Image: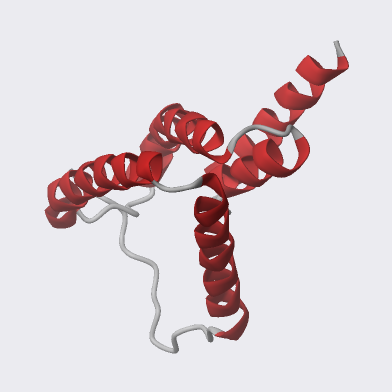
Length: 131
């Protein structure tokens, strides 16, 4: 019973964080590999499936608040689907240990970018989407 409850709570917390744009899927992946003991490939597959409903739930809010560039929408979706498929295919051919090291390196690069990035001076909120 506790395993189910822990997994449920991890999904709920990372879902809320995803809605805020924090990167809940990445945190869920860390939970699944480090704490739940899942294989890296299985955890990444679950994470890809997790992203679909999480993204769909956040979409109306982002649309309503004008945080979506209509011109970039289709190219971004197409590139995202193609790259996710290619990366998932590539991940199945890598050794799990190498895959873990690549993911750890990715997290370190993203963490360093967040740590050492500075806010843009001329950043303004986009106007709400009017149609």
